[in-house]
Image (cartoon, rainbow, N blue to C red; front, side):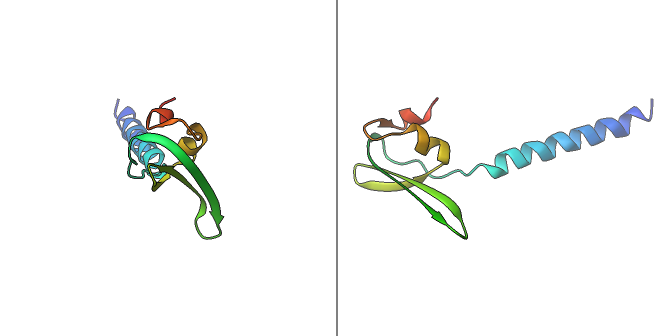
Length: 83
């Protein structure tokens, strides 16, 4: 019976670490304004990797790669991000 307790603790610890890593790896950027996407930009920086931007009502804001791929010109932001 006592041998099962350390295994349970290790399993719980592993689950917590995996949950933390899964949420820590995905970037969270502030949401942009609601409206129609008028422009999209992306570029690569050696130090930071790929950066993705959308423009809505003249306001340019950074988004995740998935949001960039789902939101084409003419689509409504933030509805286009929900897939």
